Image (cartoon, rainbow, N blue to C red; front, side):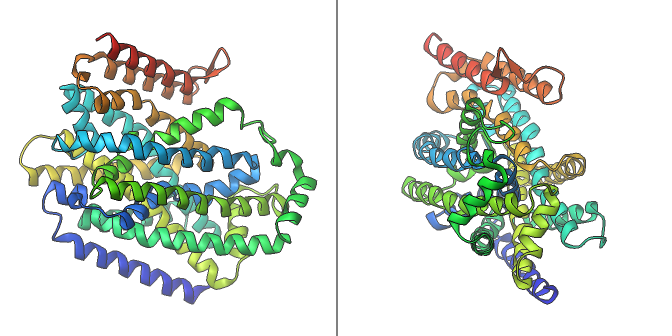
Length: 462
């Protein structure tokens, strides 16, 4: 595997260098640096959306989620992603229309303009910051523990994590969003090819679909039904997850930015349909890998299971491609999120453009360092951490949707304050300060419903 790893890794690094140098001259303005010229076609759009949404969380988190909690994980993610496509088509159209009327650089600036209040923009930024930093940390930690498993005793985990962050910062800082988008296309193709090859080998070792389900039935029949052996997939969890995931394109700036910079709505529509197909193609093989783990490694730790299933049980050269694919997936998603936070910072700044870009670049470095620290301190439960991130940013949706659909949002200045209060309550529940349920209802779902009702009623009687 060593020679293949060196070759594939060298090609990957070379591509990053090329992407950065090719796009460097096109990033002198905020529009060029943070919005990639706002002329994104359907093919690049599909892969940059896919690489941003499906990442380390998918390739590492979902197999373990299927292994531990069962096939209900398909409802959790695949069904939610399919529903999300319709939201992109409908709400994305209106977002693009409203963004065209403003000097759009980021969602925070867009919210400030809609509410005619910088405070509203700060609330949007705070929400994105609080819940995206942990999501970035998931990418960094996920690959770091995987590399630690692949090369035991070589270097400590923190060294792998630091290396990932450095690579991510260097090429994104130089080439801007355009370089990230080109890397996304390479990463998306690599991810799809590698995960299907791994899944095919796992399925062959299990003896085919029929034998797979029979073996899982014998091992732990609860995996083949909801709510699963640990009771995770109850109705509230699945409903809350679907709502939170469907809101990602509008509440997480790394995705909403891509909606805005599509060349036209026709390109967006093609991208959305392609994204739904890509989602099913990339999630289904993680089910096969997860069932493989449920049969052969039911009691292993997350890192041990992933190391065996993705590397040591695979042919040597394939393991090298898996490693590079994971690194590429982590970098592609993490830098998109960190870079988006930099764009959000720029959208709230006023002053000479060149100076503001420089300040935003400094902010990107700070965000990356914070993500690194969180990655080193967080747990290995990648999917549940990601789910918490989705639920947190979802609380921004009522405020954002008012800005998109109502021209009177500036008359409801209390909505941003209520949103910030809800975010504070959710953070307190995740820290264990207050309960995560009230009267048997999940707190994240309850907060979102309350904010949505307040926004609808407030808009009607404004």
